[in-house]
Image 1 (cartoon, rainbow, N blue to C red):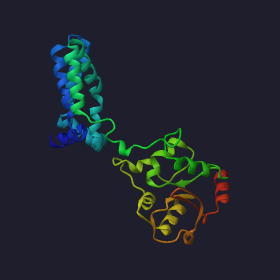
Image 2 (cartoon, rainbow, N blue to C red):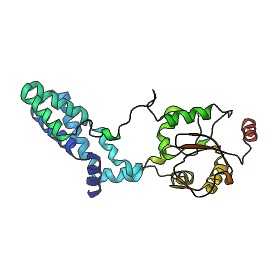
Image 3 (cartoon, rainbow, N blue to C red):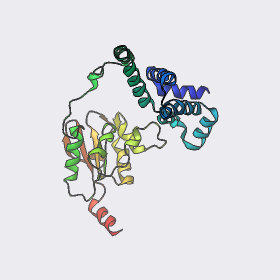
Image 4 (cartoon, rainbow, N blue to C red):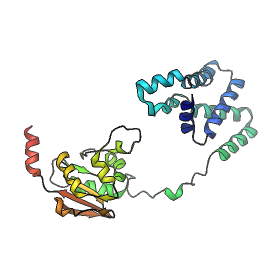
Length: 258
């Protein structure tokens, strides 16, 4: 049971949203007369919550489904709908008092909309993704490659597929998912604060990766040019290298032949 409580505490965050939901359930249980609504929002939610807190269910899920994702069981509970309905019900019965109460609960239980404004950034383009991603992807696609094979730094992984699905990569945004059980030596090298181009060359050989996009502000353990990398262009702080130890034209002919 302790593990289930831990999963719940991680899901509930500060806890205020779940407290409001449970209070809303109690309120609907007392005042709601529509049987279908009671069945869906009250009885259904209570049944699901009781199921989630069952040790047997927890054991079966973590053993035969996926242990790290047990918190997703809470997605089945109509928390948003329940809160909205309970709040609307309260205001409809007690317009002024209900409205002020809901407003006070939201104000005290949440935080200012712009409290995270320091982390907000003005959109750089119509795609609302970093312009560096757009410019580098466009430049690579404009080269003569039939298919672009490129490795990107970690901070670009969540944006590449949003903009260009044609670029082939040796690893993707799954590297940023803590619940993903795989690993990639290539990604580990690219995410290191010090770039080892000798080992990166080995990865490019093995993965047939032609282009390497790196943060030029990082430290280099060795020189890119000495390990088969030629700088072809630079955008802002990012340097784009081409790996030259593979005959890419021959490689393309082999791919077309197969």
